[in-house]
Image (tube, rainbow, N blue to C red; front, side):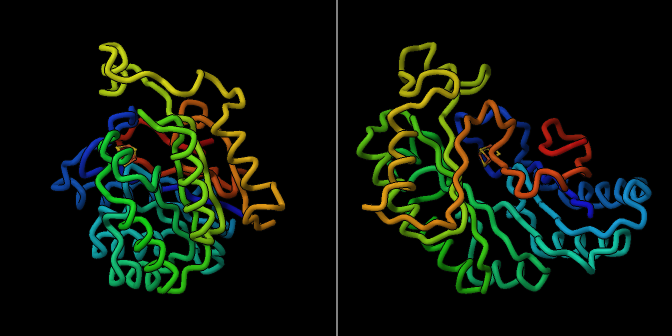
Amino acid sequence: MAGIYIHIPYCKSKCIYCDFYSTPQVETMEQYVHSLLCEARLRHGEIEGEPVSTLYLGGGTPSVLPISLLSTLIEGMKEVFDLSNLEEFTIEVNPDDVTAASVKALVALGVNRVSMGVQSFNDGELQAINRRHSAQQAIDAVAAIKDAGITNVSIDLIYGLPGQSLNSWQRNVERAIGLDVQHISAYCLSYEPGTPLWAMRQLGRVVPVCPPGLSLTPQLQLLEFHALSGTRRCRPQLRRQHSSLQSLEHKGICHRPGQWRHCLCRGTSRVVGAL
Ligand code: SF4
């Protein structure tokens, strides 16, 4: 069984901690999609005869692609690969792109799993890292996704945000668990050279909360506590992933790592799951 990852390197704005390549130049989207399909045709022999079981659109922010272009992409992929046995079709979304109509359109394209970057449920924390959405938009987005019939939802959180207290992180964890999603990923904020966040630290305007590396911070202990304690809301099927942005290469989680062998990404820099 094969899995295909397609990289969509567009973001409307830049989060201050992010050192991954992305561009706001939406005028190149159409050309990019056509280039992706050219690459797909050139590489279709890599999985000749192998059924494709997973398709993952990551970024960047794939949800900034207009539905018409997403449709062009998926229909074009169907002409190149046999997607009739697709078990899982994931798209990464930003909360501010999610509407009832957009999710309905995604479902019509075959999407059955959504991964959403929430990062925090505190508007002050979101603004501090230049996220484009509010906490309420994230909550509404999860509701819209579920209302559209998608039952496999993953959300990302970041801990160690500038000024974040342990209490605030606790509230974030509680609100994430309260959304009753299938997967929560938590990452420790990392300070990457060249990012605005890095510069702010150099200037003394922010002080890292988490120690470098993957040591068990109080924030992470708290997450463990919530997930494992019988006295808190805990669902056995909840899967957690503890990692740092640095170590994972990207916020994207490879849902089926063994199957992510084929990545399409014209002219972009960072890809997860490549051979
Ligand atoms: S963190 Fe995600 S949404 Fe923010 S700039 Fe980076 S790729 Fe774009």
